[in-house]
Length: 111
Image 1: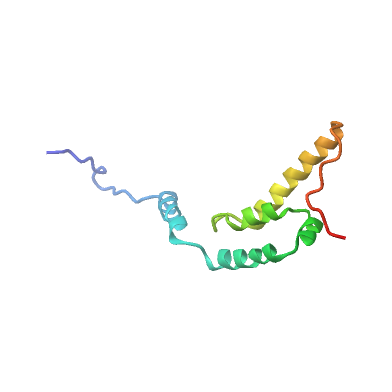
Image 2 (image 1 turned 180 degrees about the horizontal axis):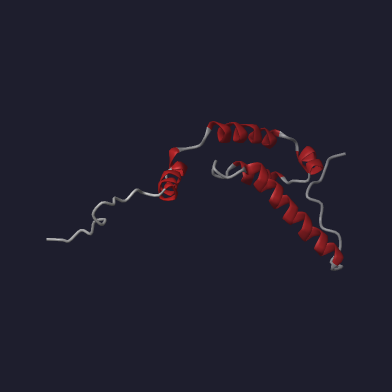
């Protein structure tokens, strides 16, 4: 027979609010995307339809937009794209300051 410890006489244990919230929100990610997440991703996917010239004006590449559109829905694709493009621009600026020359153009536009 296994001994199960219990609370002292006259006292009973109430689970803390923090423990309840931890268990509740741990399962929240498994419930699926929220309507706001679905709407945001739907709006973001419109950027995939932009031309390469427009994406270049915005400061992102087609590859970055395509990769962001394929991220899991719980990740904010617009924020990820912003962060990734910023890191790339910083790396390009560092390459210029180190004297390695101008980075190659990402797009060649027809005349």
